[in-house]
Image (cartoon, rainbow, N blue to C red):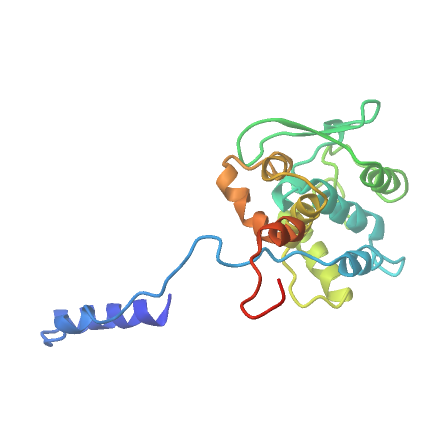
Length: 227
């Protein structure tokens, strides 16, 4: 709640108490809240490198954590989508990954990038505990027959950010990083919306502000500078 809203609520309460304060309500301005006013918080290439290299053998489950980050970074998967992945969602011969029960309530088949596939393969072959549970990511500590929670997946990403010296730890920054990378490599906003599986194109418009090449073409000369 903003200070303005809190002050209005206080004055309304004082009015119910009989105080003559209603005229003051009209002079409390509401701050502007423009849509897409902020920039998406994406990682720089060197930050991405530090995050990926932070999964050393000193960790309890480095291969699992590395695979989780690659899914978020390479495919833009949300933490809940990573949590819901099953073993049979990966089609190894065709190199695809199927997302079921997504936020948009549809089934999506995504191409599986080679680095992501190799990370998943390393986890499955060398680190995943033996269990009858069909969840892709399972607990590394007993009980092993339980999937990793969404909270644990967020913590994996947050801890990787911390080890890399990145102050914020929001898992969504990996989705933003993928989108910004697509835009700055020549991808359209429609392509970003398709990759991130946005139901509305308007949701992806914020990434237009990160298109450095496109913005440079439409930018006007600064007053007083050489044209």
